[in-house]
Structures are given as C-alpha cells and as structure tokens.
Length: 331
Length: 152
Figure 1 (tube, rainbow over the protein chains, first blue to last red):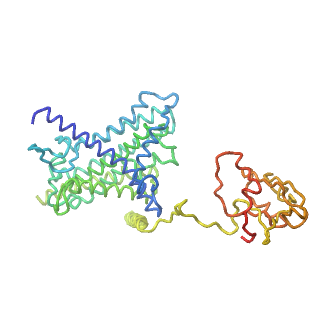
Figure 2: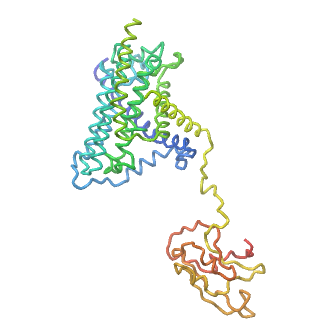
Figure 3: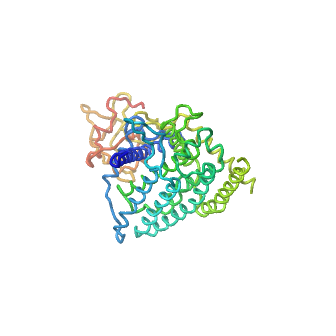
C-alpha cells in the first residue's frame, strides 16, 4: 500500500477510535448511574430522554457553560496542561487494541487495530503510566494543600499497582511468546486465557481497578476525604477532561483485559466472531466495575498500599513462577 | 491468616449477591410529581380557615392565633356582624385575615390557640411561588376552602 493511502487509513481509524471512546465515555457515565441506581433499588436518570439517554448530553452542555476558574497563585500553564495530559494519554493507550480481525474494503485488507506495534503490550503499560503525570501536575499546580496530598496519594497508588498489573500480563506473555496484541487474540482461538491463567486475570483486574482510582480503591478522590483530591480546583471543561480520562482509562483497561484474557473478538466456541463480541465483553467488564463500586466500601489508604505491595505483588510473582513451571512441564 | 481470607471472600460474595439481587427488585422511588405520597393525618401544611356545616365561618376575629404565633405572621382585623351581613355566628368576624407565609414556621400554635377551631393546618405543601408579595395570603382567596363545608 502506498504511503498516502496508509496515512489516510490511519487517520480514519483514529477518528473512529476517538468517536468510540468519547461516546463510550459519555454512555459509561449513564451506565454507571443507572446501574448503581438499580443496585440501590431506585431509578437512575430518567427525565432527560427515554431511559435518561440524553443525560450525558445535558451534562456535557452544563460543564461547557461552567466558569473555568484558575486558582490564585496556581502555575497557569501547568494547570491548563495537566488535564490534557491525562486525557490524551488515556486515549493514546487504546491505539494498539484490536477490535476485530480485519476487513477487506475494495480489495485492501485492513486490520482492525490502529497500530500493530511489535511491543504492543509494553506500549499500553507505558501510555497508561504516562497518564500519572497529569495527576501529579494537577495536584502540584493547583496551589492547594489538599490537591497536593490527593495527587501524591493517587500517583503513589497508581505506580504501586502498575507492578502487579504488568506482572499479571507476564504469564500470558510467556504462553504466547509475543507482545503483539493481535497475536495474543489469535492464540486464544481454542481456549481463552482466563481459563489458563485464572489467578493472572484476577490480579490484573484488581490492579486495574486500583490503577484507575475506582471502586474500593478510590480514596484519593473520595468527597469525604481531601475534598476532591487532585481535581478540587478544576471546574467546567477542565474537570470534564479529568472525568473523561478516568472513564476512558476504565474502557482501555477493560479492553486490554478482554484482549488478553477473554479472547478479544472471538465468540464463545468461535461462534460468529467479530467486533460485536469485543464490545459485549468490554461492556460486561464495565458492568463489573460499576457493580464493585456500588457494593464495596473503600479501602483506607494504608491498607490499600499494603494490599498492593504485600499481597498482590507476591501473588503476581507466584503466578509467574507457576506459569513458568507449567510451561516447562507441559511443553 | 488463611481463614481470614476465606471469610473475607465470603463476605465480599454476599455483598455482591445482595446488590445484584436489588437489580431485579422494583425501585422504591415515588416518581414525583406524577405520583404523590399521602401525608400523615396531623401533617402541618398550608392553613385553612374552616366553616360550620351551615356555611358560616368559624373565625370570630379574636386574634388569639395572631397572639400565639411565634413569628408574628398573622394579621387580623375584626369586623362587626350585622343581621343583614352575617359571616359568622356571634358578634365579630375576621374582616381582614392575612398570613405571611414567608414568616410562618408551620408550628401549629395558631391551630392550638383557636377557640372555634377555625384555623387549621391542612396537607398542602406545594407552596412555591415567584414573587415575594404573593406570599402574603389574604383571607378570601387562598385561605378559605370555598364552599367546602367544615368537615375535612
């Protein structure tokens, strides 16, 4: 394929991915509110459109109209930059995720991921790690003690759980021998890796929840603590960007989980594989995210850190050792 | 340590089961304003000046309610009943009776003080309005349940 054509295809894919992520973010907020409400025996938003479908639109309009204030004494450039870093890194991590196998348009075979980087898995871990910069800079540039404390706690939590996140993926890496996500999906044609690596999946998902500052690991942004943590001083569109970054991180992490453990775009028993299965699995994982948030009380920060370093990390190492042993014995 | 983990996982599972059960229960929300709940019988809402069964007003303009009111929200001006123009049994009636709803604290002391059970607090609580002057409720228009006999 000629270079301009490749660039055009990449551009179109980027636009489609951004559309998917932004719409996904908007309706993830609605899903969360409706599902949490259902679990609390009440309705969620149901006034704005049928079943509240226009609620995200109303929220977006409201946030757009809100005053964009910058605190006095804040570092203005960094203050404006921080939410951008968070959002952009969250979206960038999605570039290597394969939504489907490939489509053939006008004789050209087009794979359904934006970029098949040869270190795909490492790329994802790196991109989500860069998102931590947004949080650190937000807390620092706000000129507010509580924001600073919140951002320090949040970033410490995120980098702690990145270790077990990465290690839980090493098991799958050893089995497939490849970092490329499309290869990992294709290796799951016979059996999904969740059945081969159950411990790995559990560790991955728990670490992912902690990475995205969600469900029981959300002390840094709990309203009863530290006001609102690192995004206390943000309002309007800037706050919306942090909000976006959180939900898009959730989507990305769920997508990686489906790609690596749940067979990606494969249907069960290879029944009619395709992108719809991928989206269904990501949807189910998002529901699990919300389910955990609705049910569990949050962990106190020291217990959170204790859990990450002294329980999850050894468990992830154990998983690596067991997988290595399994490979040696059965191959 | 290991028994702790077992208990923890069991309690986690019980919590998750409870919340998922809730998904299949009908929501307990009463969707106001389409559906409304009935207030308890002694609920203290908007005031009403009551009448006797024969249609005469119960209020005799004695101002005991105005005296009892902790917020001085009630203003009463008494007038003489004549045989041609009779509003209430007895000598006097309330010629002007106004309650400033913004001062009223809905305590019900006026209801307790009234000797003829003329002023009572009813169940209406939807009292929002737009202009401050509209909150001074005059006697005839907003207080009296017109043509509705006293029994309520």
